[in-house]
Length: 435
Image (tube, rainbow, N blue to C red):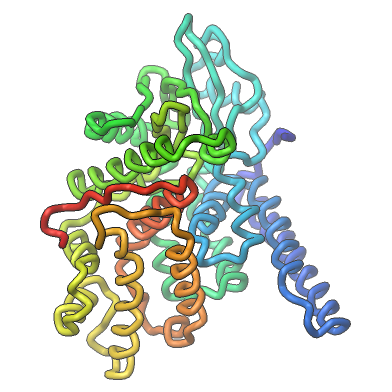
């Protein structure tokens, strides 16, 4: 993959990149309308593909927050046409890497040394490159290490990048502007945390220790003395990302073991720690042939407030949907319903959220759940598509749902998709009070 020798870091140069991308997208729309004049049955498929390619190419050059949002949207498959999902998913672990001279410059800034002075060996080429940073492999004696280096200018461009991303999201994905504002506010806070590598090291060490008892998990050891504001050094974990792992045709038993470890990992964080690794995309997990699951990134951690936690998981209770008054109270606590909603809106949203909670809560209603059942996921996608086309939701005066739900929903959606890709059947352990 071709390396980048520089990244636009100034507001003007980054904004100019968005402007040029917008011009390309506008040209794609003109081509699409021209095709429609010739063939009235022409679909948006080519338009989506062209837009996805042009937007991804630009975001991958900018890196940082803009590319991270693309990665998140690729996980939220219900928001995006397939062309965007496929292209944006590349940002999870295969974005264009940064050239080596810039890597050396980062080391000299924080350690006053080159990586070759700190390590016995250090790969000049990145072994993985994503939205916020890239990873190099290093050694000290027999010890094999992973060294993550943040791209220059990422932390300083979070706020301005998200402002530039917003018009694209509104135009291309048809999102409600009020909900998008809430989404972007929450994302901004999390992205600023993700650029703080010192915070990531502390969280990584704490959560790894808190989850060390869970069977089948492996966490790297972190080295604060070889880490800095924009560099993290940790143990290297051997294995494969899920796509490569599945290509080895692992047995159903191994798939189920990894799936169970994933479920227990998230169960313990959410229900016991009340904070969670909220970035469950494929690039953050390493899978081994014996069923061991490596967890390698704690940059995005969502702390879950007690009141939100209690109301959110109350929704997962199987009998709640049969009690309208209790359901209304819970939905109000979660900012799905508001005091100024009309009787028509209350009845409409109550119906919508009943269907949504019954569907998304299904895994919690059984002692064991088979995530290989594509019908379950097709129902989720169909419901999401219907909701995205509801004019009442798109024109709502209020964001429908607590801001805390954005990352918790994203966590469960990412977890469900990983388990579906594995084709895993898991025992859905849950708190005793959740029945």
